[in-house]
Length: 230
Image (cartoon, rainbow, N blue to C red):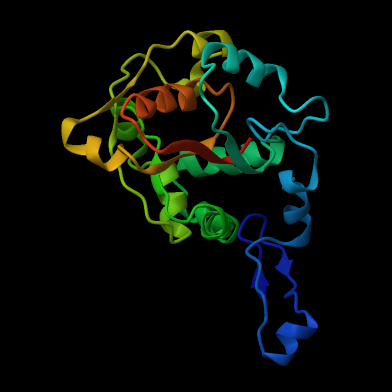
């Protein structure tokens, strides 16, 4: 009997008529209770700009503010799950205790998204600062992509030195300076290509928009972004 990778409860295999005919059993890494705690954004009305749950006009108030700041930007942000309390527990276990096996919980969803939506696109993960990478020892976004079998290229550098984003409040994050740089060697990777920036969580959008601003300055064909949680 399989056990839930999060809570340890038994996991019941799910099988459809088609799968039964093909002798194919679908194994889930999470039990039904834990799966139900993950709120899939595709089941809700969402903002067209950032994928947050939103039932108002096309764009949420946050995206309207970003549009005033970046009026010529026409890309959008994609996400899979709502960043609720359960998601926060998962991501904290992943990022702050070094439990990289947590990435396996989402490899199906992350892999399916990129296979379906991002053909002929270069995936660029958001890099950690040297301080964060030194204390953590890995980039959680890269681990998520690797677990899902998604190819990516690391072309951005994060030169920010003053504190971790996770320790900052919203106002402090919004005032943060541009932390990213792109070397001369990597500019041709961006120019004329479809780019998607990948991160684990989208909160205020400040980090993603810093990266978008830099990438756009090097003339990509398109630039969009993705996170596991929003």
